[in-house]
Image 1 (cartoon, rainbow, N blue to C red):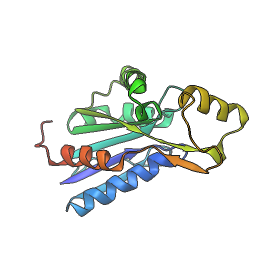
Image 2: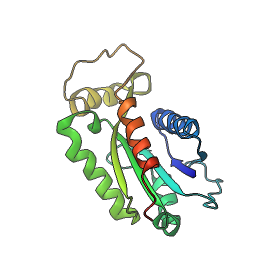
Image 3: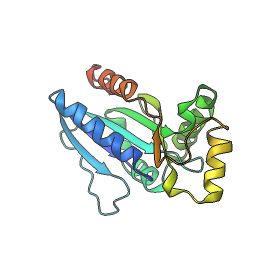
Length: 178
């Protein structure tokens, strides 16, 4: 089986997630093709692809435009294959944020027309060195909802790697339905 991983990353966490998934799938004995949706020169081939994993972060309530544009352009190919969408956001890190995290997915699905077979809300990471004062205050008081975290730390991952691994394994091991 060959799995196509289409991803976009803004601060690096989704890129890390894409590499983690690629390694997991290859260890399971399957082939992978990885495509960075932000590369405008990328050529996406679905030849020999059995399943597709889409992964993108949410920033300012939406997934990156290049990711959504690419997904829209390959809609027919996605409809012919089982597709897992991983939506990475800080809201996915906390139970009270899950409804809003799902709203981001629903809005993207309306904009792009994509209808993934499986959707997983995945917690992202905080990269403190990338934020100015205003962004750090929004992060602290709106996104993290005044939860304790070390603002002096360069980064803090909220991604549950074991849960992500189980989600991907379940998707890969499931019989094809598309």
